[in-house]
Image (tube, rainbow, N blue to C red; front, side, top):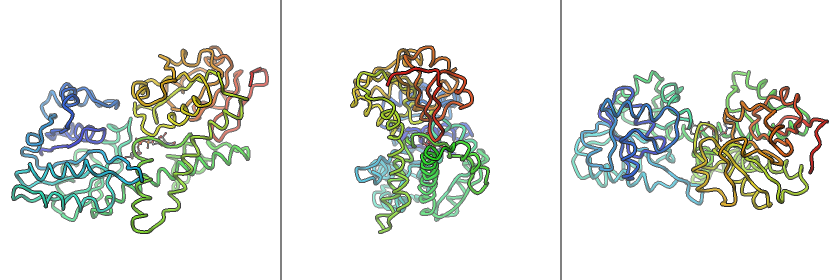
Length: 442
Ligand code: UDX
C-alpha cells in the first residue's frame, strides 16, 4: 500500500514510521522545511524512545519518505492519514483549522480514488464535515471515502503501543474502506473494532475521559486517605484486583497533564454542552485535577513559615517520564507559584530541560544533574517519576541537602525504605514520615 501521512507531530510521525515497519510505503508531509530536512536524516523532532532507530532503518530501506510538497506526497497514495493538531481554543473546544486546511489540500491534489483516515482527535461529526469540505473543493473526478481511526498511543511508549495496543478502532459507513484499513493494519496483530464514524469519534473522547476520571477519583481517595490515616497505594492495590475495576491508572499523584487528557476532557464537556447536555461528572474530574496540582504546594506551605529565599529543588519537569513534553505539566503551575512566593527554584529533568526553558519563568535556575539540583536545598519536590529519581538512594538526600525534606508528588519511594533514613518525607495519600532524630528549620 502507498500511504501519505499529513502532520509529523507525535501521532503522525509514530503512525507513519510504524506503518513502514510493517512493510508499507509511507510519505510524511509537513509544512516545516527544517523539520523535514532533519527527519530525512532519521532525526525525530520529538523525544520518543526507539523512534529515531525505526525511522533510520525504514528510510534506509526506502519505505519512509518526507516532503513539504502535497503534490509529491499524495502522488499515487491509496490512503491519506490526517494527523495534524487540534489545539484547544479558549472556550475548551477543538480548533479544526489545521484539519480543514488538510481537507482542502487533499481536494486540490488527489488524482485517484483515495481513503482519507482521520487520526487527529476531532469532535463527533467532524469526519462528516471533512467529507463535505473535500467534496466541495474537489478538483478531479475521484471517489473519496472517510474513515475515523483514533489513536490510543501513550507518549514515551508510543512505539510499544503501536505494536501492542488493545484494539484498533475503525469507524466508517463504507464496508470496503473498513476492510482496506483492517488489511493495512493486519501485520500489527491487534484486534480491529469496526464501527460507525460517530461512535469511533466518541470512543476516543470517552476512553480518555474515563481514564482521566480514574486518575481524579484515586487522587480524591488519596486526599481522604491522608485525613483518615489510610495508605492510597494499599487501597488502589486492593481495588485494582477487582477485574471490573482493573489496576491501571490508579496511581495517585499531582494530577494528569500532557497533550490529551486536559484538552480532550474539556473538549468533551464542550461537545456535550453543544447538545445541551451538562457533563457534570467530567466537570468535576477537571476541577479535581486542577486542585490536585495545588495539594503538594499546600503541604509545602504548611510545612514552612515562609518560602522567601528558601532553595527549593525540583526533580522532574515533563508531564510524565520518558518524554520531553511539557504540555500541561504540573511543574508549570507549581514552579510559577514557588517563584511568586520568593523561593529560589533550581530544577532538573533528564530530558525536558530544553522545552522547559522555553516556557518556564526566567527566574528558575536549571541544574545539569540531580545532585546539583538538590545540593544545599531546604526542600525537594519530585514532580515526574523518572527511573533516575526512583532509583536514587535516600542517602543522597541526606548527604547533599541542607535539610532532607522531601515532597514526593509521584510516590517514588517505598515507605519501609524511607523509614530507615534520617529524612522528612511527604508523599501523596500516604502517612508522612518524619525521623525523630532529624532537626530541621521551618
Ligand atoms: C494518554 C492516553 O493514555 C492515550 O491512550 C491517548 O491516546 C493520549 O493520552 P499520554 O498523555 O501520553 O496518553 O500519557 P498517559 O500515560 O496516559 O498519562 C497521562 C497523564 O496522567 C500523565 O500526566 C500521568 O502522569 C497521569 N497519570 C497516569 C496519573 O497521574 N496516574 C495514573 O495512574 C496514570
